[in-house]
Image (cartoon, rainbow, N blue to C red):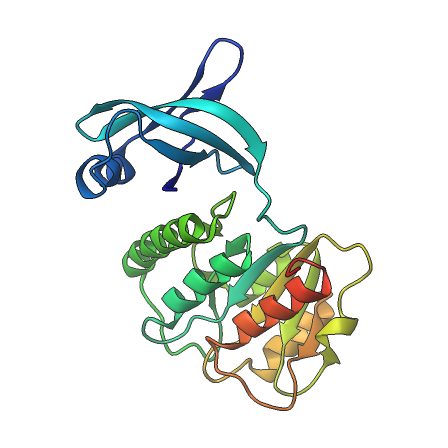
Length: 243
């Protein structure tokens, strides 16, 4: 069943209705050619889904009559925010798409000492908007109940200071196995992944001084676009979110 996100939604004793407009509205009316009476699923982006049917279509605006509200079952119990070192080319697009499918709650690109890609403010903003669209489409496809937020690119030190929960940095120089980094009952994790050249030693020391645990993903050195997906897979598995 087609699935869409909207914050223009009411579900109470008086009104049970959602409005989908803009690009999604056009997609419903023009690309999918859906008609009044057809069923679809609407998500409020806060973990709840709604079964509904199209009540009206007006150009790019679709009004949906909602029937049933229920908790989305695909959202993980562990909130993972990725802080990938800014990579070259379109690697970050792949990371955002796949990390969304795997349950990440947020992704914030980080400018590190060894980041080759160093976009200016205008380019970074444009890229952020594109990545947010990719996250939205991946969330629809994978049945997520929320869309990961793509943060604006920030510096490494700021990212370390702002990160929440257990902070884990993957370092080719060694560290603890990931299974030993997560305290029992932890519900929030921040994951730092280096760019193509890895983290500079000074960055690793700064991270340690600010409460970050260094970890390893095994004896093989993974590419910058592979490491965050491997880390997410392990984190979701050991917390029961892959069952």
